[in-house]
Length: 155
Image (cartoon, rainbow, N blue to C red; front, side, top):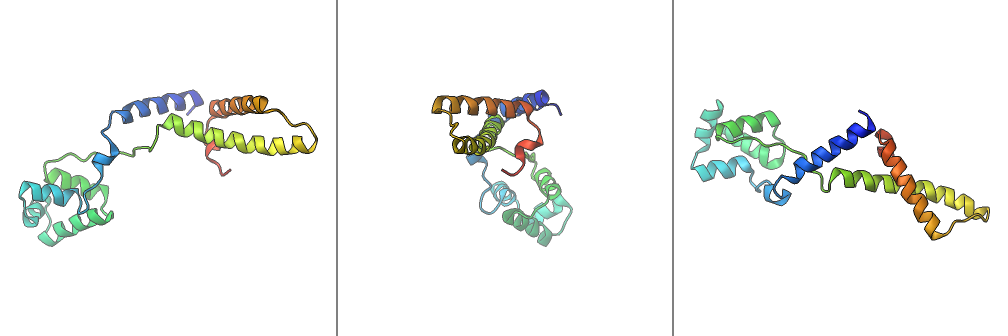
């Protein structure tokens, strides 16, 4: 994917993700969504198992697997259908993707400039704070424009 296309994709994803409710409101209940919804509906594990086409102990195991985080997406999807629910699956970044890219580019630019700045100071060619800030800003913009996987290599 080209750099411009990635930037457009990030903006589109940020726009879509901003429409989601707060991530805090979507935190899984301690005993899991399946059990919470099943109990709220007044459904027994035997009834859930029948709707899933599995035994009652298997339905209990599915609920337990969800509560421990070891359930598969396929099992979760089937449980959702058995409870007449939709499975909504998403990765929600802690901050907008554009912000992640800017912060990463800033970190890389600072590392590069620190190395260069150290060498220049040793040669008595240090730059003032204003020039240094401008260099940093220009390098951040250059790194963002280049984009790509190099952005995520170890610093």
